[in-house]
Image 1 (cartoon, rainbow, N blue to C red):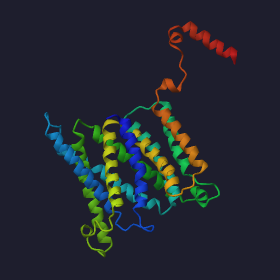
Image 2 (cartoon, rainbow, N blue to C red):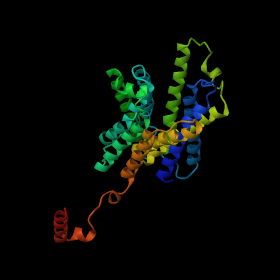
Image 3 (cartoon, rainbow, N blue to C red):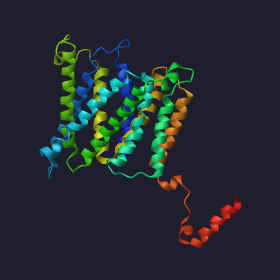
Image 4 (cartoon, one colour):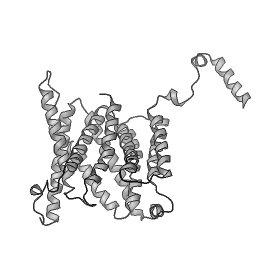
Length: 336
């Protein structure tokens, strides 16, 4: 399967996640424990990956599976990073409002590019760096509301602690993605075997969160396993399956593409969600939204288009004849 088809599918599923989550509410509130959704999504990913691994193991030759503990022990690290990231998110929201936090979240686009270069040693051209910055600018522009609204005034009026935590949150989000890509490409192990390891630890950490929530609530509603499906509807199950499928697609991109492709997919998904909300939830589009979409599309073209499509290069005849090149240059100067 081509990476751009997977990226397109990831964009569609990611954009539908927010819409399905909103539709799963009843009278503006969740009838189910939302903390159970990530846990069930991890279990779904684990079951699907296990099934594909079993089918793959029936073939000859069998898939490569590294079982050395020095390799296996690396797989809990992404879950640990995401656990720290989630706590930093909550801490950030105590200092800034939701709109400011959402806009600051676009910093992860740039931090992903930086860590992509520093950690994975992947070289990016100047045009690609410009495209990444443009993507961050475009997504931010689309989220800025009208200047007459209170959220616009609060954007630069939060305490310094909020901005520092927002930057840390962006760095942790990027680090988790970059480290996952490092793991997936570290060896030639089967993708499904790597997924089984990732999602086993992911399920354990999400289950631990449910246990901690029970202790914090004094088991007021009983243990989590007795109420895990309470309030679930068909839409809620669609949220779980959609979230799990999104995670499987991301792991495929980490193995066969890279983090930048994932960043573009999720950024475009955010814009697609906003556009769909206009029809589904009577959301009023703004000038900033249209400008942001245009900038993001320009960024997408700049990053993935071949350089010869973006820059006017001399013709082959001029390249092979230095005298002709010098003559062409003097003609341009005389014309100007």
